[in-house]
Image (cartoon, rainbow, N blue to C red):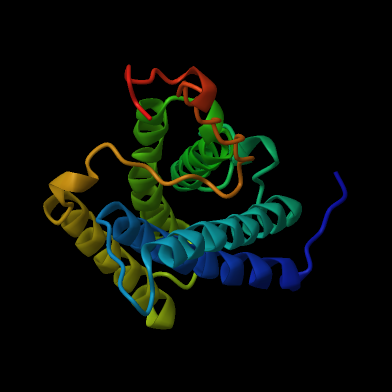
Length: 216
């Protein structure tokens, strides 16, 4: 592999890592709004659901840039394999492995949303629960691996994301209404199936209607 040691790769890795963490925090929080059926006249549930999924795509893009610049930077020995297989990085093996686990879980959740029309709702919900584990692992990965995450603004961002995630998790478990149990929203990333046609009515034609005897 061609050796790349430009500092701009390192700067991009650090910036996109923090941005991705903030975006995934917002995505998790909006997912809690959607799950708890929150919405009003100004911002409805449909708009929150669309924003939740649109931001998830943006977050995945920033995460992909973060991973790409990390493995391209030859200043530290990571490699493409460590991006998908944990414990294969020579640089901070455990810390990087946490990021790999978070990426694998996020990828599983995202793919399940793409295939939502082809899998059972129960299976989709089960896979979607891993987003909480992915977020928690990403926060720990950012704190342990991030150069800016242990002091200054970076530390404030990591602590704020962790606090928002904990608050969202508590509200998700305690504030979900009973009427929302078992309901899931349709993913706009999937192709909608055609509507089921209504059965034709079997009414008698007017000529075949029975008439009373002696009627004029």
